[in-house]
Length: 145
Image (tube, rainbow, N blue to C red; front, side, top):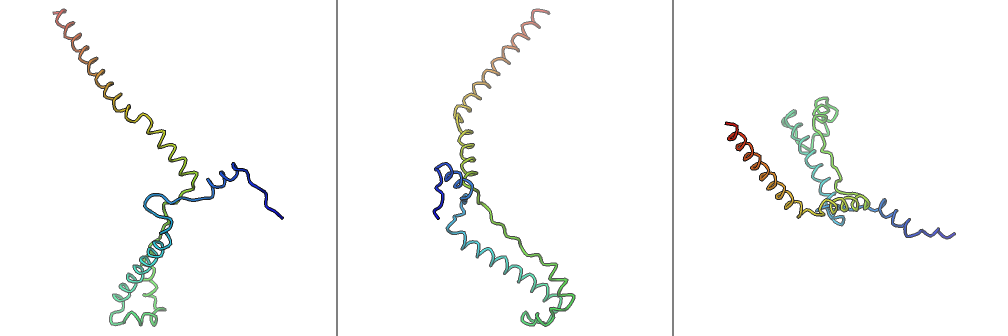
């Protein structure tokens, strides 16, 4: 049985919702390697902290003999006091979100250079108006006295 053919609009909609993009410096091709490194680093940190705490609690017992005291309540207490670092996968968005963000940034950028010159012109006009008000105020005070 043949698959139903999708129209170009349907294909585009599926692409925008299903496909993902990795933002910034996180390359999608390097992700598996860096994720493994992150996991290894987090596990190493957890092991070192727990061994350090157990060594303080039971001096004279080597790291290899820790399995012997695994049922000890102090070991369980120290095991709970060490918190395993949570890893988060960041930086992935759907292609639709990426396109929407890019369009918003482009819309914000329109007329950006002119905006700066418009502000300067408005500030100059406000200074001139303020100077004219001061002159009028001085002229009124001078004529009333």
